[in-house]
Image (cartoon, rainbow, N blue to C red; front, top):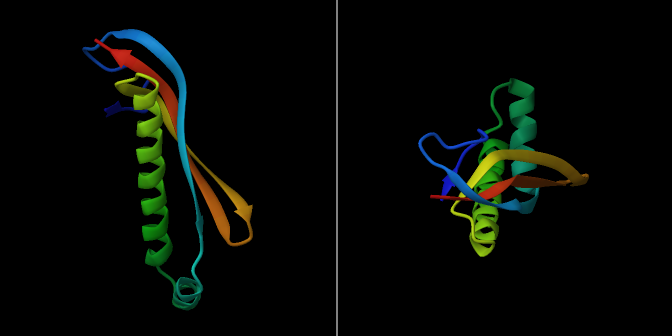
Length: 104
């Protein structure tokens, strides 16, 4: 599966557009990670616990988007984007979406 943020794939021709494809996951913060993050907030620096959690969430959202694209007959996703929104105080949704297409 080709996934790109651009609106075309160099050297390939789009023969069919299947439409919007998407995948999402909702992740909640973990109390133990919150404590570590709070300590890091005091001394400064990257909060690696949250960086890792969000990276895993993005990968899961991409995987689900890919499954949606394949189910609809696409072999590529163009104009792929991420969106993140807060669902409740301790949880966020990561959404991966784009246009599913069939390339020749």
